[in-house]
Image (cartoon, rainbow, N blue to C red; front, side, top):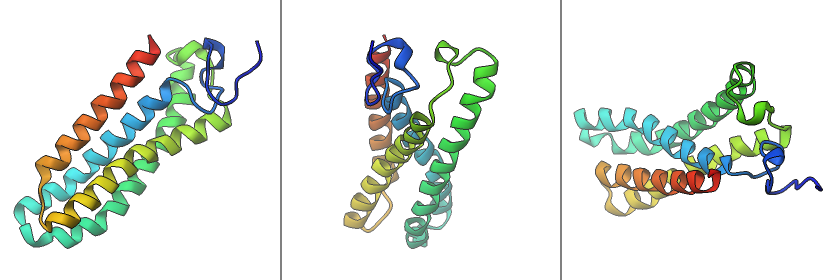
Length: 151
């Protein structure tokens, strides 16, 4: 079968194509990583409600932290998990797949970052339950897509 470089259609193309069923899991991972990093500001704002301006400036750091997390995950996935036999079909990611996996983690973080910016920009105060509800629902959506495509 001809190698499908864009979307993996058969098992041997997974981790070699630009996108595969793991792509949706990487988006979900970015959402979770960004939301977990934002807990830093949430806790700080509980003690200082006037800290909203500081929180908005921290979003870029949470985004960068999520990208760093995605890079570290790809390194761990393609070294330790591969050595331990826990990687899908014991096959390392292609360079293109690994790059796009990190970009998709960043895409998940960007979804949260844009929502937070638009939402907080309108209400001019911290409404954390709405942000975490949105993050949770977004994670569930992409995780369900990932699970449904895997099986």
